[in-house]
Image (cartoon, rainbow, N blue to C red; front, side, top):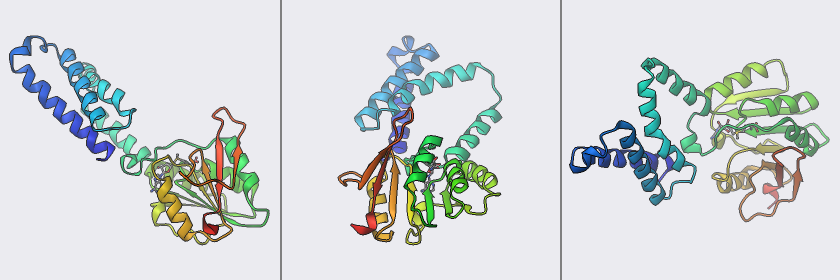
Length: 248
Ligand SMILES: C[S@@+](CC[C@H](N)C(=O)[O-])C[C@H]1O[C@@H](n2cnc3c(N)ncnc32)[C@H](O)[C@@H]1O
């Protein structure tokens, strides 16, 4: 079951159980809204754990209903919640489906990626280009190369498009990178998550040219030995895993 589905199931089932319990003999114990919210959160976390949801969902389940109770007491107009939801959606889009949230490559990593680019003019794509900061930095240090970023989340895409507008060698497209053919690129850069790495390997093996380079920030391809691994001297101790999928 997808993480979002199991979260919805856990919340609904635990909500129903606590609602029924509150109307029965134990109602006196659950009479306090915060107590009911805490009981619902505990039960939701237990159900999510039983459904093998990723560990980071458990604190979300524990805290969700208690936060709803606290927010209900703050007397905030409903429109603000809608705005917060729309903003979150515009920034993170369908992270529940892609399982790739937004976090950004830092400047040191971008500088390290620049050292991995071929000396001759070439084409580079960033799969899920976020706010475009990596591509902007690379496009400035390598004006002889052409850069393309593909991003599906509306707000990061809009921001990156506007901020890259003055760079003639940097294009940002809105779309799904799984639909983007990779055969015309010399370097493919990906900073994703562990979830799509196997599928990415299949795609890059099928589509990339024999000598083209795949650089994966932080997440190695399971079961595949990289051609080399570059350790970036940053606080995160970023690793850049380099592969030649088309040559495999
Ligand atoms: C971890 S961020 C990396 C951002 C940027 N590449 C960087 O290194 O700074 C991953 C990005 O991929 C985007 N993304 C995830 N799945 C995508 C898809 N199928 N198509 C396009 N963008 C996607 C996310 O919205 C997010 O902005």
